[in-house]
Length: 394
Image 1: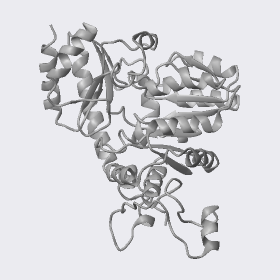
Image 2: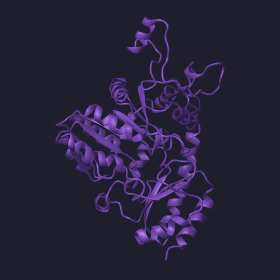
Image 3: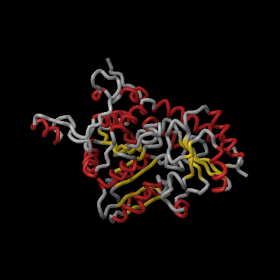
């Protein structure tokens, strides 16, 4: 009989936990232990060098954290996963594991602001060349990759303008020159997109966002082949950006409802985007689920859903944002996304707060742009809330 393969909703609930359950518990425990003891010094040594399964020290591994890594590994269909204290730790550690002075990286102009700062400020200090191309200009990106590079870094959909990159096309170009391809999959989640299946070498997540889904735990992850992830793990264990076991527990609990949450969030996001598109106080709406989105067809090909994130530019720019935001009742005005509650904020105080107004303009991010992370509320309430807030704009 052919073995049945569970789908993502079932994997989100059940995967990766069995090995961590003890004393007949049905839930993974939080193991708050810095160190793990051994009476047999030979067994201790074999665990320490990776010859035998087990744990030595909390900066390296932890049973609760390991359960989180295994659940996400199964969801992304990856060979291996390692976790981090934050999403930015996952990004920075993964980049620095493989990049060295003299290398060249090709990426996008409008990646998340923290990522952009790594590209514009920190990597150049290490004599690493960074070329940023216009997001969605696949011809330009292919041309830059063909010149030769060590690594191609992609984020799709992007934060906050939700632009889409054709993963299969760009990954193919990277492979031609022997470059690694990293993909930030935070916005899409493994429910909507699986970059490894499209040929990516590494997938990155800010687990703080949709994976956890409750805005109460920080975390990050890198997934890919065992060969690559073992190198990243070694860099992380020495440099110390370790996930806390209490955060791992909260992320595990949140991931059980990942599929349900994402399905409701993107259903709400689609209807919010359609409402805003027809409002006279909205300049432009950015959401890949809209048929007139520049990359709608690419999103349809490589994603199974369009996600819970959208953004929109208000007429009147910053003055309009100042009038609009305080009037929202069913939205946290905060620098977060992916939670069960709708979360809203301008790019200048959320995704790109580290950038100057001039830098944001160069990245194609207007000061009047509002990032909207749709929650799981009733859509009629969200629409009425938006109507009232938009009415406050003179």
